[in-house]
Amino acid sequence: MSADNSQPLVYARSVGKSFGDFKALTDVDISVKAKEVVCIIGPSGSGKTTFLRCLNQLETYDRGSIWLDGELVGYRKVGDVLHRLPEKEIARQRRKTGMVFQRFNLFPHFTALQNIIEGPCYVLKQNVEEATALAMKLLDSVGLREKASSYPAELSGGQQQRVAIARALMQDPKIILADEPIASLDPMNAQIVMDTLKKINVEDGRMVIANLHTLDTARRYCDRVIGMRDGEVVFDGTADELTTSVAREIYGADDSFNEAATSTSIPADAKADDPAWSQPAYAAAMVS
Ligand SMILES: Nc1ncnc2c1ncn2[C@@H]1O[C@H](COP(=O)(O)OP(=O)(O)OP(=O)(O)O)[C@@H](O)[C@H]1O
Ligand SMILES: [Mg+2]
Image (cartoon, rainbow, N blue to C red; front, side, top):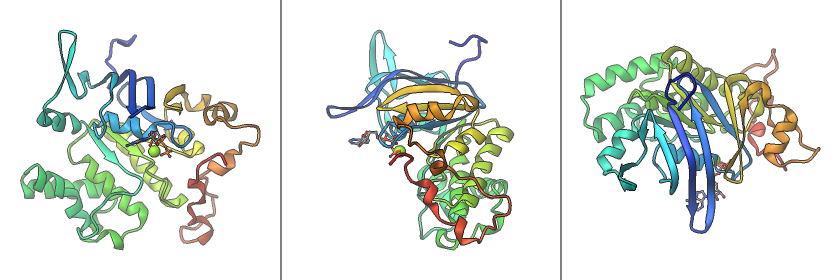
C-alpha cells in the first residue's frame, strides 16, 4: 500500500457517511503511518468529529473502507459482501484507539484514579490491583501522580484533560484520537496538554490524530495536517505547507480571514494565573 512497504496504521479509502440524506463524509481518503502526529482542521460541520468517530466505531461508515493496523474496521469481507462484525469483535477493535474529548468526559463523583480504572475494572473485568498499578504509572507519566485521589472539580481543565489522556492510554492503544482536546482550555493548559500528547507520540511511539481549531497549534505540534471541508479532504500536507492562503481555502474564507483569531500563542512573559491568558477566546470558530 505504501512505497516503503510499511503498512499504514490508518488507511481510509473512499469513506462516506450520511445522516439521512445529508452527506457528512464524502470519499475520504487518508493514509497515515505509525508515529505521526496528525491534525485535522476545517470549519465547523466539515466532518472532523464524524471521521474520528468512524475510526473508533462510535459511528459506522456506510461507504468505502477503513483499515486500522491492517484490519478492516467493523466488517468482515466474505466474497464481495461485507458482514458487520459481532459486538465483541468491535469492542476488541475499538481498543486500538483511545479517545480524548473536548470536555474531558470524566465522572464527577469518581476520583482521577477511579475514572481511569473504571472502564478496565468494572466494564472489562480486569484485575483491580493491576489496573491501579498501571493507572498510577500513567498518572505519573502525565505529571499527576499526586492528584490520584482528587475529584474532577478539584482539578484544572488541563489536569482533567491529562487524566482523560491517562484513561485513554489504559488499553495500550496504538492510536490516540483527540477531538478538540484543547478547545476548552486556556493557552497555558492548552500547551501542557499538547506537550503531553506529543510526549506520548515521541516516547511511546503512538500515533496521535487530533481535531484542532487553532492553526499555530497545528503547525507547532503536527507532522501532518489534513484539511476538511464539506465532508471532503481538501488539503493533506506538512505543517510548513499550511500557509495562510491554504488555510483560507480550507476555511472557505475571504481576504478578511485573520489567523490571529485562531492563535493559542502565549507571550514569553505570560503568567499562568494572569487573567488575560485564562480566557478561551481563541477557541472560537475561526471565520465569522
Ligand atoms: N448524529 C448526527 N445526526 C445528524 N447529523 C449529524 C450527526 N452528527 C454530525 N452530523 C452532521 O454532520 C456534519 C459534520 O459534523 P461533525 O460533527 O463531524 O463536524 P465537525 O467538523 O466536527 O464540526 P465542529 O468543528 O463544529 O466540531 C454536520 O453538518 C453535522 O450537523
Ligand atoms: Mg467536531
